[in-house]
Image: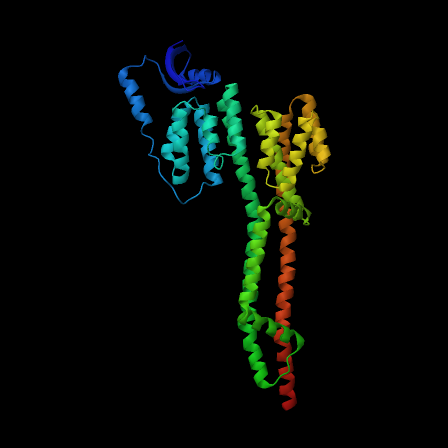
Length: 418
């Protein structure tokens, strides 16, 4: 087999030069990564001064640091980064080189400025996980902890593949939730706009005509006319009340107690509650399973899951589970004591602990909850549409009655006059 020459850094940042007999450069990179080294260069010939100069120039081709005041890093940006990095490292590309390539291709200026710092730290000898931990708002705990476990075990490529798969799943779940909520919001906005136009534009014109003729307004017409005048003259009160309500909801959701109350309310809303619960259980199972599969210790994994779940209800339940497990109780028993997790999840976790395949069973549970969540979304949408149509139809019928009843009275007057 041929001999390859390499340059790499150890966890302390010291540069190492050496040679290794292998069948390909990919095998060399894999072998060195398993030893916990960060590969910077591999060649089938001894390094010359010219090649060392080229390597240095290539490393300095990274875009300059830039101060970015506006903009944001989306979940899609982070998901694409995870997938790209996993593919490159798994293919045998050195970590520093992979970061360099992604940095050059990154279009988001804010994300590029963050990756620039990460790249320089890693290239300077810092561990990848430590470089990521400097940016907790960009890289979540599950990402940095998994990378650290991959560095320790020497299986960074495999771990990055797991993290990338989880990031794709997490993005899909968020998109499903957004899609489920988009349709109801559109229905409410359009329906409200139509009713507002009829009440403020059509009703006053009809009522003024009836008043000039001298027709006594029936009760539905009087109600709609009063509502119309209120909306036209004192609309600011209505919009002010809506604004105050929105501010109160945002303020309360920013507090732990308020978020807990709102999240528990969501879980108790008919048809919507099961949908939210399935999404949260999927997130819990997938995150927990992914972290355990990457080699993250179970207590640390539970702490990360607590921060990663979106519901304060399940976050507090996971915190209870963490405390119970820390005291030596099995995970399945701790889940049962928390009283917020379903029986099927508890039983599957118990089987996973007995067989030593807890991470695999948690991932299967996540897939199961994904499927049931999609059915819950369909059921929610199937129930929401007729309910909205009934409410909107009732409003339209009341408006039509307020218009037609005076017309009928006017026709009676015309016949009597004739």
